[in-house]
Amino acid sequence: MNTLTSSLEFSHFPVMLSEIIQIASPEKGGLFIDCTFGGGSYSNALLKFPKTKVIGIDRDEAVISRANELEKKYQKRFKFYQIKFSELDKILNKNADTIIFDLGLSSIQLKNLNRGFSFKSKNKLDMAMGLNNISAQEAINNLSEKHLKLIIKILGEETEASNIAKNIIKARSEKKITKVNELVKIIEKSKKKNFSSKINPSTKTFQALRIYVNKEISELINGITKAAKILKPGGKLVIISFHSIEDKIVKYFFSNFSKNRSNPSRYLPEDNNTACFLFEKYNKKVIKPTSHEIKINNPSRSAKMRFAIRSKNRFLFPQNLFKKFGNYLDIEGVDA
Ligand SMILES: C[S@@+](CC[C@H](N)C(=O)[O-])C[C@H]1O[C@@H](n2cnc3c(N)ncnc32)[C@H](O)[C@@H]1O
Image (cartoon, rainbow, N blue to C red; front, side, top):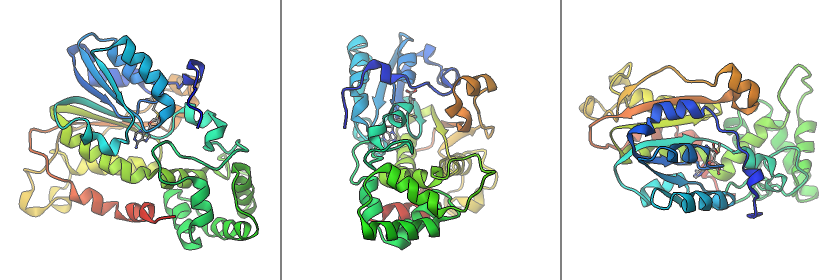
């Protein structure tokens, strides 16, 4: 992996930065955890307020040089850890004022064709964000047809998953699939021509593989659970999601573990209905980028921000969150 990333390549355009700052209210000071450091825009903006302390987290080693710059500039107020956010509790066990997740890929990762995230790439099928056990190449060449189909269908929400999985198996029986463009060709051949569709035919399969390779659903569920454990009473959990599975999980977590949940008895353990809400207040209204932001940064168009405020209740493990999305966790858990 290329770790010599120049500062030019750190041109990730931050999504809803002013909304993040407004919710986090850094002018009051406090401890802020930026769980998805990326190009460092949120951390940098929070550090401009003199009473803040910021911890940055990212699984990608390519961001370390940017993090080092901030560590040097704000020696007493900024610390970076290259870990997965599901391991949040390894670096902190309480007292965070605001925890932020800006999910998915950064444009730094997408634009680097060596990483294999973009279907424009002709390079190795990798798709690993960092600290991974497998690559997309291993998944594509080792998984059974049944599991490939499940991954593409459920994690990619791709209706033509059967055909795609079948053609992957056929192609790899002739020659190992190692390059992004080889996979793109197989997907294009497998899909019925749909000229009215605006999305690239490979989008959903690529989303599925990326989620599987990086175990993104398990990361999200474990990450937000640990964040709820570490937040102070009154602390804020802010999450920006980019695809429907992520948003479904975040919405469920906030809606069903909040004091103002709509139907308590349906979702929460009956014996402990009032004592186990983790969030005091959840504003159900989703925050989206303004039309101006979408115009200047098109990838922000699918972003949805939700946030909730931690209650005073002691932390209770949100078992139902894991149960509810168990099917995704099972699919991600299959070894390649
Ligand atoms: C959308 S970018 C964040 C961009 C950042 N907010 C900015 O404005 O520069 C997401 C970042 O989160 C990182 N990431 C994704 N999943 C992660 C996980 N489970 N643990 C740690 N970092 C993760 C990615 O490597 C990527 O750098």
